[in-house]
Amino acid sequence: MPGAAGRVDVLGPPKALAFAFLGVGAWTQNWLDPRGELTPREVGEMFGTLVVDGLKDGSFPAKTRKR
Image (cartoon, rainbow, N blue to C red; front, side, top):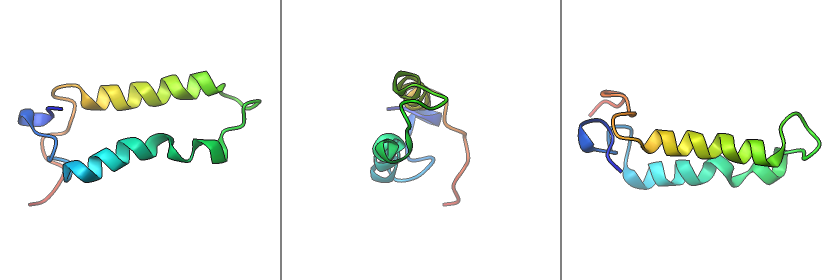
């Protein structure tokens, strides 16, 4: 999962980033109303795009965390 300069730890520790990606949908069952503005499929596609695009090479900001 390369990010800026080929590293994912630019944003934070890899374990924390993994939990963030998992957490994107972890509470969906608590707030998603199937009769609401977005269908479950639309929400899934939106979340999928968010996660996949976030893993694309070069999509992480170069500097976001102080070391």
